[in-house]
Amino acid sequence: MVGVAVFAAGGNSLIKDDRHKSIPNQYLAAVETCKHIGAMVEQGWEIVLTHGNGLGANGGCEYCSNVDPSRTEKYHPALDIY
Image (cartoon, rainbow, N blue to C red; front, side, top):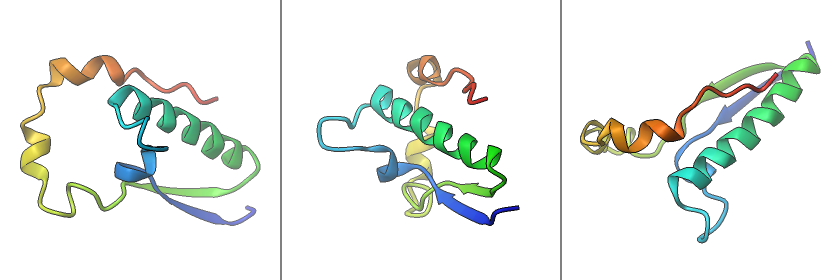
């Protein structure tokens, strides 16, 4: 083992800049992040991956429960990072 790395991925960490706030852009940022994490796993790192402290931590769970899955499921295909 090389070491332990902790990632809090989600919320603002997936928004690269003001021009890349959309769900498809956040998905692409997550794919990029997963590739880096996958490379670290291959190098022997132990990974702790958690969500950031965005909506859920701020009482925004009602927002999450009101999202229509038919509008978002096309952006959530399985990530093949290996």
